[in-house]
Image (cartoon, rainbow, N blue to C red):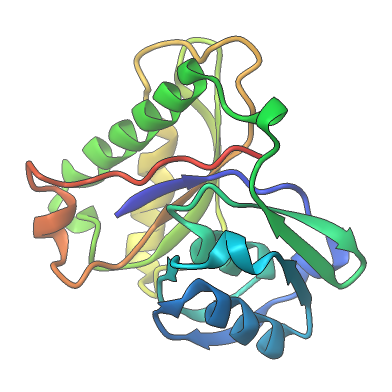
Length: 208
């Protein structure tokens, strides 16, 4: 599963810290509590916004921004720094909601990255977890990318570092399209068969 998640900037010092996390799949409210206990970062969220939502597994050493992006993958929730050491999670304000054009372009990004990953047997998604940032140029090409964590396989990391900058969305982004874009590639119980199969589903992008 590949999801696009746009996250508001966190305090620089907090974003640079790395935490060893082992958060199992569970309701999002409980997962955020587990994140807070593990990192010491307070999370403020209205219970109505997380009710009925599920969070995926988050395991490994990573900055809190990466962990939060993984927990929120597939939701329309956004996170921002409320105060030093405190994050607030909310639904996006209606005024800042993504336009239909932006939403379609998020989907185009997802499909472009999925096609690239599925084109090489060594990078088939579903067997590893990855979070990265990309910047898209005026003509739809990826002009910069940054991997935010490791897949746990150094050779796969190097392969992805070379592949992602070659991705092209094949059309220009809409005017004032928000950047940067955080991509989360999640593990799947079905492995690459689900991620690259004809019935694969892509999660909706969240707007900051």
